[in-house]
Amino acid sequence: MTIYDIAKEAGVSASTVSRVINGKPGIGEKTRKKIQNLLKKYNYILNEAARSLSTSETRLIGILLEDIRNVHHALIAYTLEQALTARGYAGIILNTGPSDSSKEKYVRLLTARNVDGVILVGSTYQNSFMKQLIRSELSEIPVVIANGWINLPNVYGVLVDEEKGMERCADLLFSGGRKHIAFGLAFPTPSNINKLYGYRKSLRTHGIPDSEMIVCEDCISQEDGARAADWILENHPEADGILFGEDLPAIGFIRRMAELGISIPDQIAVTGVNNSSYCTLSHPQLTSLDNRPVEMCEEAVRVLIAVLNGEEPLHRVMLFCDIALRESV
Image 1 (cartoon, rainbow, N blue to C red):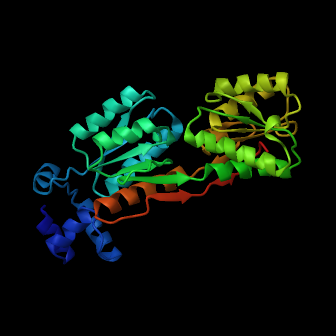
Image 2: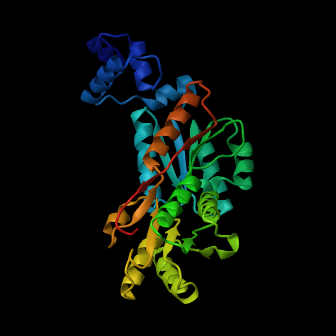
Image 3: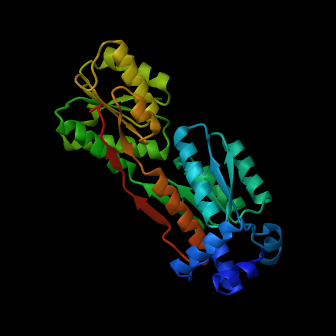
């Protein structure tokens, strides 16, 4: 089955089929769907090696993230890969780890593969080191950062307004009568710092000075959440609410409080961030800030493909969070 056979059966030209295969614009949705169904029916696979020789494109997109074992990053990697595949591209998913030297190694690996574009997952890539690395190694191809941005001509950012989202979470607890709200800070990435700013902004709105902020640092794992529970009880027994920057430590916090006989949410309300699958496994179920990872990924792919097609989308796109209300508040 060739491209010409597909075109004949669809009643269109071979160039129209080619445009659908390559994700190009200018094809009606009905025609595009008809061609896609035929491609699927006949299990048509484009010869990428032959096509790349003629077009200098590889149809390969590098996806860099720190650690795919993180359930939030796993969802993002899956969504990105599926969205790219649907548009005729293949995603190369690489785990860089947190160190600059490792990130540099993996970026150079992508340049050796001659990828058409790169998607960086997370605000951990939003720093001066990556800015210089993009300048030196990736300046000729588009780079999209999921939940981050760097001010360079070839860099595009799809961000989520987690600062406003965390402010809304704190406001939610205040509206429920909570007066002493703490914050569980994970790694001090730009994303997590924005969450901290949102918490601080809500406190200021409710007349609470910065000097009375209750911040427990390094809240990343379930064990960290349990440690935060002990710390809160020892140092701030007045706390009647806590916002965590991630779901896992929030669940560890809830579990530890249950062990100590402290009722959630009667005595202290708890929220997390990411609206992960863990939330409904917790008892009580965890209220969490939904930072819309699926929509963020779909937008990141849309922006990248637009650039590859010669368009010029906005360099910064902002999405807004929702709060998934459950039993912990």
